[in-house]
Image 1: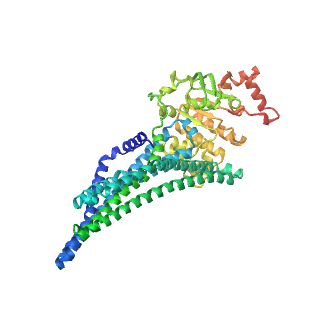
Image 2: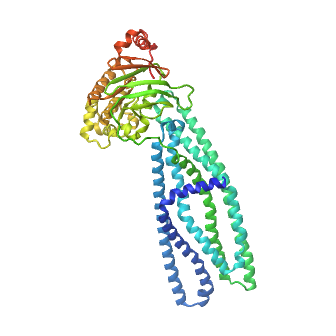
Length: 588
């Protein structure tokens, strides 16, 4: 790790800790006071050996015992206060950093989630932030007390016998040299370990999230093997790091013990010569041990520092990631939606998903998009909700480029019912109310009735309070879809997007959903609707149907207008009504 990289990392750490600087100073003062009291303890040994014991007086022994007991009661109380406050401070800081990281995660552009797996991203928020805990607690609070101890004890050693204190001029540079030597390898190993943790999280999250697919393909062993590869790599990396940690700790301990041995030899010779008392030598060696503890602790802190810095690097990458770009307009008009010469290519894709698309969705009307697979239908919805922005051209609402709106304001104006609705592990009411957390129970139930969901909700064990399980695992496809429609109704948006909302359902479920959609359309007047259809029979009544091919609009018109033309729409219609349903695939 270069000096500039280390400086940048420390600057980032200080930026995170700066808001707590007064609390850090208070904790440092408390811990330094405890360290100062600890520095006085060898003087009890010296005084006992050189004064109390030789005096042979009961009163002297009694006074010494009382002072000794009171001293250590105070010291223990201060140590406990320092320990608890240090831990509380660390938890507060780590909690704040975790929330900063999570909030930033939620603001990242959608393409970022395609570049890095969700398990790895959440590992940055949870595991990597947790890895900062030891570094912050040791660095922000204990380190100050340890450095204070080094200064105080070093001064005492010099004052007691400066010649013996010179031994530290050899010992301390050797300890620092060993630490410096292992700093780079430990940092690199710690960063690789953090990466491996993220990969293990990603693999396990992916398997658990698709557990039905895993089981249906009898792929348990395959998934276990994937996880085993990451787990083995993690273990191997940890073992390599532990080798370096063990070597560093062993060398530091060896040098420190050599220093004590040198003091025993030199100090013992001075006692023999009469220039040093036994009590003074004993106190000096105790002080030397006291000095070595914070010095070694500071050196070993390098181990925590490198692990923490590796985690900080990953957290910083997340905190420094650019959030979604957005404008400043908070008022979203009710107007026509227009795609003007829009071209867009997904990152890493070879061909354009949209190629100079011109499209108009008139206010208050229902437009449908049809076309073969890959024609760009779903891409239109992603640009409409600004999950992506056009590479060329613009999308306007009421004549205003969507990029000028605040994202929250724009997305509140749009309700999307996807092909595979995303439900959460809360109750039915919580899932419907996700569109408006402040909605009353009365509004939630009204939305459910309009979505034709009331009947099946009444059959659930706890009605609206029934937990749905992760991703709504307890519901059928049609039931999930009706919950999603109820959520869209509750949102009270003036733009509705139905992204193949019935394509995965059987005919009976589709009829129920179509009825539910009728409730959604009837909820308000002036609703602008965009329907992406797989089954063309579901969009016959649309005001206008746009046919897309290879990212371009090839024809538009009503069902009655398009069918006689014999164009692409007529071809798709004939395929869906032919004797061989296997030929039919108009999904986008």
